[in-house]
Image (tube, rainbow, N blue to C red; front, side, top):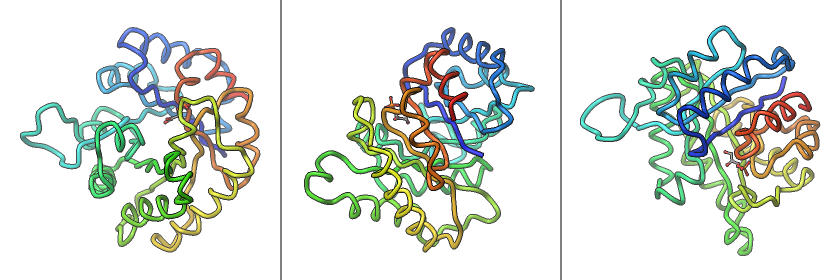
Length: 243
Ligand code: 13P
């Protein structure tokens, strides 16, 4: 079983999100084989979840607040996404880390908030081009993973990781499958140190219908987290069918 997750980011408005969700539900691709989930905007999430009702496609939040309730203008909590019908939440996406200045500590609090609320956090990690130039990929990933998982109490919940090298996101220059394969193996060993168990690790960054098989065919790569190519019906359906 592989995971095919579509992060719609801030690409689709309300109507476009609902139309795409309805169209996906009507497609006859093999949803039984894999776990498919979409991550719509917060505004469209509830309506999208209504469209997905009865299908095997799950929904997730793109981000959550780290507290469950209170005076936090503009924020939406993990509990609220859960009560609206979400199963997953992205946490620490690089756009949150680098555009909105989220720290590793913020990410940790959000992971805990997801677990408390019964959501499955998909913890995004990845090095920047600068990290890569300075030979700091392992350093960056180690730091992000340690802050995320050291001493974390999962209490029967589930967590996942998405390896998304920042330089590969939206650039059309994905991390090659051999390179991704070895980083995934390394991430799995790191996480196991902290959690004592294997968790699914997805690859994200310029995944498209043409290259998806090169990732999905690898045992150590448990699936893909797709941005741009998940926002168009034709390419997302192809991606799901090819995996
Ligand atoms: P792209 O697939 O558009 O490169 O985005 C990847 C991503 O950030 C998914 O979360």
